[in-house]
Length: 100
View (cartoon, rainbow, N blue to C red):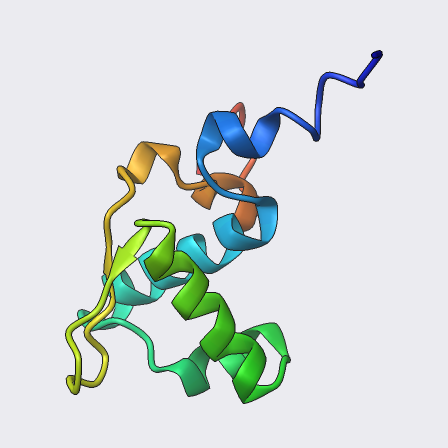
């Protein structure tokens, strides 16, 4: 069996897919900018997807152990992934070799 080395193993090494990483990066950035986690409506507007799509992703992230929420509490998403593992610099399109 001959597999390409990139995509097949990358999510397992990181613990999440690229799309999940995008959501984690958004939650991380939003939380640091506004001092509270985003509502699902904020994610819906940012990613331009339907409410059920956002909710399913939040549930998926929670089941995967990447985030934690408090039942019945709005804006209670807490990221459980170390910040250095979140693809935030790629998401912000910051070139690490060029200083800001």
